[in-house]
Image 1: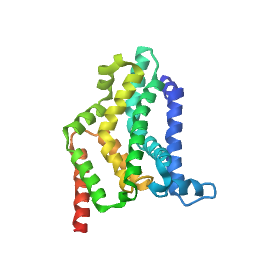
Image 2: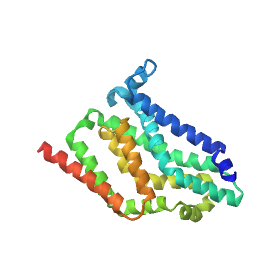
Image 3: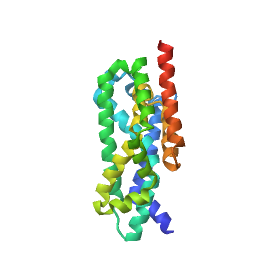
Image 4: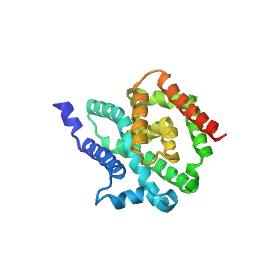
Amino acid sequence: MRHFDRMTAPHWLTLYALLLAAWAGVWAMTAPPLAWGTLWRDICLSAPVAMGFPGLFGMWLLMAAAMMLPTALPALATYDHLADAQGVSGGGRLVAGYAIVWIGFAAAAAGAQTAIGGQAESTWIAALLLALAGAYQFSTFKDACLSRCRRPLVFFLEHWARGPLGMGLRLGAVCLGCCWALMALGLIGGAMSLGFMALATVLMTVEKLSRGVVIPRAIGLACLSGAGFLIGGYL
């Protein structure tokens, strides 16, 4: 009963609502057009130049919410267990801190896509981003961030004194360090693609729930192979 009460706390219900709304929004933009959704789809699936920064920012916010919230659920549940044991609250502030980081990422991604414009379809840019994402999977910084994401209990015990908002900001930064490169692949055609988003969400979630380096390295090799395939086809 206590666990049920915790999972139905206001911040959890808000989180569930955001997650469902984000994926519903993605589905509405990728499903066969409905009368009410045609304008919404036309806006969000138009060329980046036509959308402008505000439209792209909204699109990346939706993507970040849909893709990153599932990967953060184990950490958020761990915090609630600790907070319950300590007799404190603050789950809402933790989520707010986490969200601030990804709002910043959405703004940066929207700015980058605005700058790239129509060049996002360039084979060389696609190959470059794939190579960057693949190489990052082998980096020590990626390993360090992934290690912290995989051990939320240790993370919270180390940073408990920072308070919920501070821990949320730090958790968001660690999560960003772990996942930004795969998220950035949305710049080359995955933006608002249901297939890309579902695959990337599954990969990032499995990566955090697994142990060792097999999954991260396999993802890295797949990205590098994709980059090599694109370059080979172009040449």
